[in-house]
Each structure stands twice: as C-alpha cells, then as structure tokens.
Image 1 (cartoon, rainbow, N blue to C red):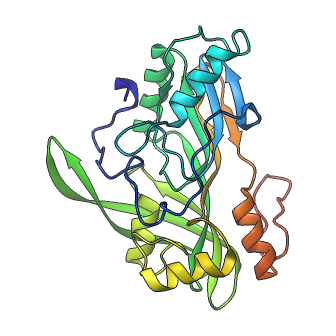
Image 2 (image 1 turned 60 degrees about the vertical axis):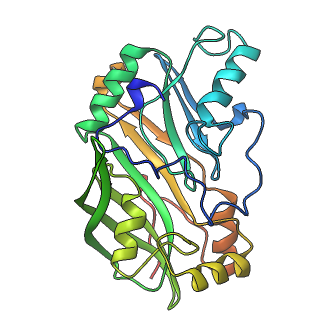
Length: 273
C-alpha cells in the first residue's frame, strides 16, 4: 500500500479481507478493461471498480485494481500520462464488495492533494444501495464503526444520510451519503439501524442475506459509488465522476418491477413513491 493511500482510520478487515459474502463471486479479472476509465489527466485516473476485486493486492488477493491499472499502463504506453512501470496511488478506499468510482493518482503530489481533500471531507460521495426492509422517504442514521489506531481498536461515531428511490415492504433502493469516510461505514450503520444491505453476509443476518443472493441471482450485496466529486484544490478545477449502474443493480430493479431510474435536470435521481 502506498503511503499516499493510508489513513489513520485504517482497519485490517477493510477491502482486503475475504468473506463469506465474496467467496462465491467470479474470479477477479486478470486484465484491466479500459472501458472502465471514467477520467484521466492532470495526474489522475478514475475508474469504475467492479465488485469483488480489492483496491490493493494483499493476503488472499493476488491482484488488485492498482496492480491491474499499472499492468495496463505498461502494456499500452502513451495512452495515459504515466510511464510504464510507475506506481499508481489509490487515494481513498472502496470496499471489496462495492463497485463504482475509484480515484487513483499517477503523481505523489496529486495523491497528497487528493488525500487531503478526503481527510478534510470536501469530497462529495454518493452511493446506491439495496437494503432489507422499508424505510422513510429520507433520514439520517447514526451508529458506530470499529477502527484501529496505533494497534488499538476503538469505536467511533458514524452517520449516513439517505434518500429512498424505490421500495416495497421487503426491500428498498436508497441513495446514501456518508458523513466522513470510516471503514464499512454505510454497511455498519445501516445494519445497526435494522436495515442492512440485502445480501450482506457480514453485517446482516445470514439466512435472509443468502435468500436474497439466491432469489435474485446476484453474487453479493449491492453498494455502488455512483457519484464522486473532487474539489478544485486537487487538480485546479472541480471534477465530477459518475459511474454507470452495475448489472446486478439493474437486474434486481427489473426483477422487482421497479421503474427505470432517471435523473431530473439537476442530475438528482427521481424518487418514486
């Protein structure tokens, strides 16, 4: 892990730990798909990370997104402004099980500026999640997450805001905005509030989680970082990154009979019901 990507709230069971929820997933891709590039330039490359592959390689994971991107750059010199063989620096975390917008820096100076923006909470992060049970139209949920600092574990307060987009009596599709960036923040807080992510075998109840995975034919929970906005302090201008909806989410919406998701003129998801 590069020093630019490390944080004081790191946790050993973040995006590198295999879990029951991911053992049934297809093997990670052995090559990077350039169609997943959302942006490149100004010392950055942003991608749409697939679920089931970690940001870094590590214990039980021979390859991560960073290594796949480095390999692709080496095999395709000149496409991206980085020399073959040069390290890329992930500047934030995204769970192994999650998909969506992920930012990697090609230069250490840019990595530090991006890391500073995440630490200062000036980065806008929005997720789509399928959760168990019904919820109000919108709200704020509070809970705790476990974090490790200097070898000691501690419990830290955590908050998420949500807005309901689709729902029935059994499940809801919500847009979630975490306040801060704790490890597994969204998953932990939702579960503590009695509304875990559907299919979350770690934080939810195993039996209904397995039933969701089997019934809808998806490989794991659905947590998708659909929008990430970097402030101008990173590359000199505001950068909006939007990742397309993953196939698993589209499949669940189709099977549930939920109308196709659409945005209003401001770019906000239109809620139904």
